[in-house]
Image 1: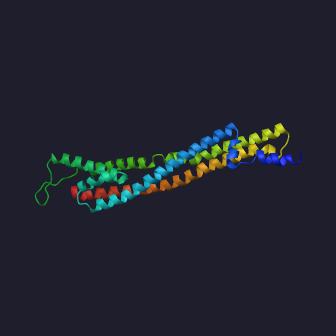
Image 2: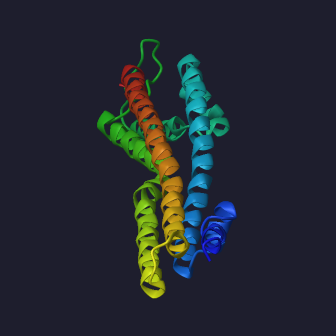
Image 3: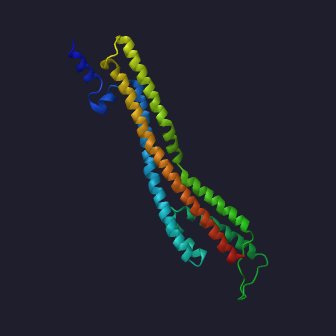
Length: 244
C-alpha cells in the first residue's frame, strides 16, 4: 500500500506531459482551454496580417514621398498611385487632388486671374475646404490601419481572466476531491491542480503576445499618422504657392 501511493500520484497527476494534463482535465477546463486557443490563433493571424500590412504601408509611403517630391505636377503623382495603394499617403493625396480639381474647375467658370505669361492661372477657392478634405481622408486611413488591432487589445486584457476562471475552477475541483476522498495527498489534489496550472499558463500564452504586438503596432500606426499629418501640411503649402 505504501508503494502504491507514489505510483498512483505519478500516473494520475503529471504523467504524459502537457497532452496528458489536457486529456485528464474536466469539461469546464477543456472549454476554457478551447476558448483560449481560439483567442490565441485569431490573435496570431491578426499579428501576422497586420505586421505585413504595416510593413508594406511604411515602405510604400517612403516610396510615395520620393515620387511626390520629385514630380512637378500632381497628375504625375496621380499616375503612380495605383501602384502604391498600400500607403495611407495615397488616400490623403487622392482626396486632396480631387478637391483641388473640383475647385479649379469651379473657379474656371468665374473670372480667373492671369499669370505673368498671360495664360489663365488655375486657382483654388478655399484652402480651408481643402484642409478638411485632407483631414477626413487621414481619419479614414488611420481607421483602416487600426482595423483588427482592437481584438489584440481585447485578447491581452480578457484571456488572463478567462485563464483565472479555469484556475479557480481547478482549485475548487481539488478541494472537492479532498472532501470526497478524505485525504489531501498528491494523488487526490493533482488532477485539480493540474487543471488550474494549465489554464493559467494558456491564458498567459494567449495574452502576452497580443499585448506586445498591440503596443508595437500602435506605435507603428502613430508613426504613419505623423507621416500623414506632415504630408497634408506639405500638400497644402504646395497648393497655396501654386494655386492661390
